[in-house]
Length: 115
Image (cartoon, rainbow, N blue to C red):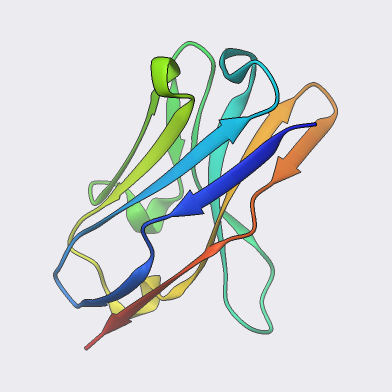
């Protein structure tokens, strides 16, 4: 069973930076496409960034140029470097691991950006 544990959330001022981490255990990390999603109350969870097994990435338009997703296979970890944060980036951020028809979720970590 895949387990995903996020960390790195917290309170940050607008314009600041934060790095989220997600450690994967219980399976072979390298086979998963990894993604970061976010959700605010009353809204659907949305994809923020995704990285494939060979390192291809894509981002939602609102974070392009500010966020960077990366993965370290040796550490079974995926990162989300968030720069130039805005109040509208405030959300619960979730890590996800995709393999074929399966998707596994972490428990989430809250990021709050103050103006």
